[in-house]
Image 1: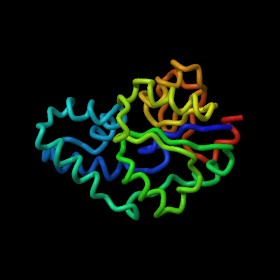
Image 2: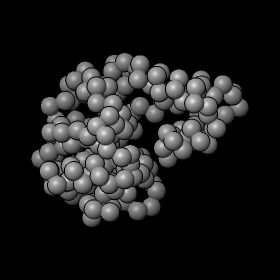
Image 3: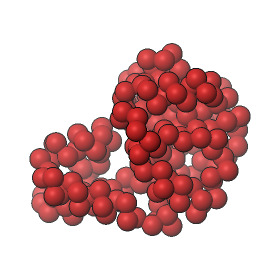
Length: 187
């Protein structure tokens, strides 16, 4: 099975760090982590609009997110076991290539991935399907795993099976709360 993975919130549990960064930038103590997290799970753009952030706040958030150290970002439990099951793994992420490469190398997961399309590769952002089309044509993707609806929409357009991780939004073929369930859920 050839799997296309999203990165943030799917391979690595990055949202707690991103939530803290956005909360600090907003500066409003009445806004909860849960509220910020819910907006980030839709998309960063949605969160920026929802909280009516200024360009300066957005710039600060992006700078702080890029300054996170690989040791501070952890892969989800059982992820490596799932990566081993695939014939081929590829990544499509909005995150910059340099950052993803450093995080994967630090956690010794880089050898599990045949290819990556990153945010600085020039493709239109999800849910536009161009990056998925490229990876699908090259690697014949069987399954797309993501944590947000925008991660699965391009796959659905291409007729590829989808799996939402820690998200129950309707429309996916499979749902996982934990990667220990992978072989049971995705057969």
